[in-house]
Length: 203
Image (cartoon, rainbow, N blue to C red; front, side, top):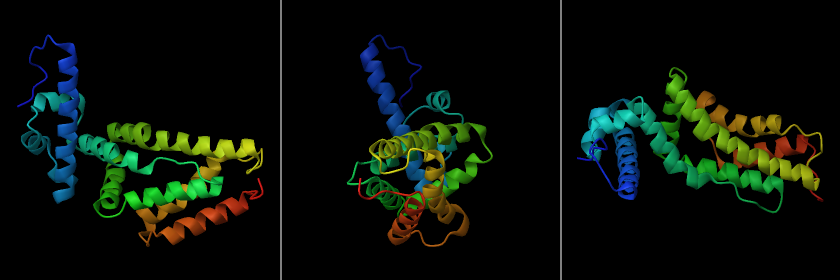
């Protein structure tokens, strides 16, 4: 069983072991959560499946749900990176479609559960905000800011409000109305928002 409390004189080896332990812990937590829900992914089960000591686990995360959150974010983040496209509209639609695709299957259900749990746990809320919301928001703001620079969007465009409108509709269907979240809906809602924002397709 991996235990980082054991003495280690080789710093580089220790770093590799630490990174490996993190991956093992997150992988085990995510598997357990997908199998039978967040409550099933207890620290005891995570330790047993990952082979990492509970002392090591508790030193890195406050609770088991935080581990599931970290594993989920590590898993999904590479799938939803922003990519530059022909226009800001196409770039944002592509990003939103990637987000939608990544949430197919059990990921969407797990995200809803994690968002719900974060409402009552300050530690989870901090992880969700700093590792999910803020990084994604900064990427989106950079994409929209570039569009303002090139003239695709007006100079006085409030990119914070624009982002809220674009993703607000997605999160509403994901967590409130539970109505179908389809590629067609994502594209149509985005184009309506950009039309209202005065998108200049000639630029």
